[in-house]
Length: 317
Ligand SMILES: NC(=O)c1ccc[n+]([C@@H]2O[C@H](COP(=O)([O-])OP(=O)(O)OC[C@H]3O[C@@H](n4cnc5c(N)ncnc54)[C@H](OP(=O)(O)O)[C@@H]3O)[C@@H](O)[C@H]2O)c1
Image 1 (cartoon, rainbow, N blue to C red):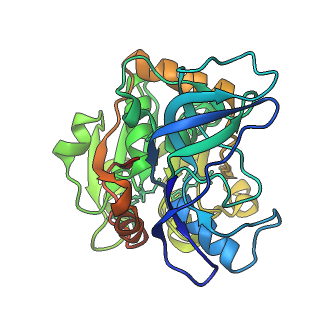
Image 2 (cartoon, rainbow, N blue to C red):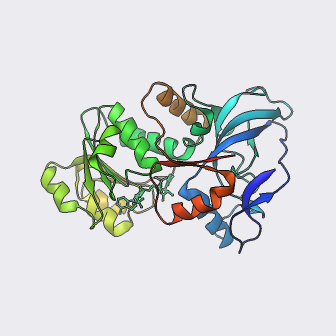
């Protein structure tokens, strides 16, 4: 099969011809329609290369964790799915690199992180959902935010941020987004109440002046610890500040009456199912930044590394 992988730890991602994986008992083989690009894809390859993963790693190391596609074959004993079913989610994780989604075929456990794809979306676009969509939905759920409450969202124009903005707006939450150059009009179309530019530095004083009562929650998908701490000062007493980058000093924030959370997404079939329902109910659409053929995935990885993400990149396989 065609796949984008690094052949050896020191290599660069390239299009290779590799053997297709085979489904074992309780597993399904999926013909991938598209892979969704996440910063996690190159972060995982970097961690594998520098020996930071506790799980077994194999080379060639195929990139990618998100996919949408159709069930092509069933392993022994599979009952939840049938050939031809449209599904989305994450493949088997271990050994890391063996089942990457920038490939024509992946294998997933039928009781793993796999669910029927949303009905209302072209199948390749469903590949944009698993990591960013589950992250966005989970963060909203753990924050406990309710209608009419106020959310400050840092890094709103990327994959996670565009889903958070839409899902929050659909719940009647007032979302103030912080971006680097993506304007009020574009974010307003997703449901943002206000958008502030961070290109000349964190706009903390402007936000404090405009929102003197503070925010009920702050989600930050972009900041290192120092900057995160500055934004967290804008959260009202009793509120929540969440980082997707491990930047929250939870103990320090407790002293200020703020719950600090370093978020880690816990993907599941059940969460994917609820995400698909949100999409089918029209609460969010995929903000497509780019749609590229598999051969161009190495360039797309380089753009993500350079921090040039607008919405989601989908790799057509
Ligand atoms: N912990 C978890 O479970 C989890 C789950 C999902 C994602 N993540 C992590 O969360 C981060 C975001 O994920 P993503 O998929 O949304 O990434 P993404 O698609 O690359 O989007 C990141 C966005 O943040 C913006 N940004 C960067 N620095 C900024 C700043 N100082 N102020 C305002 N905006 C800024 C970027 O804008 P520019 O284009 O201008 O750079 C981009 O729009 C990634 O590092 C990812 O690995 C963690």
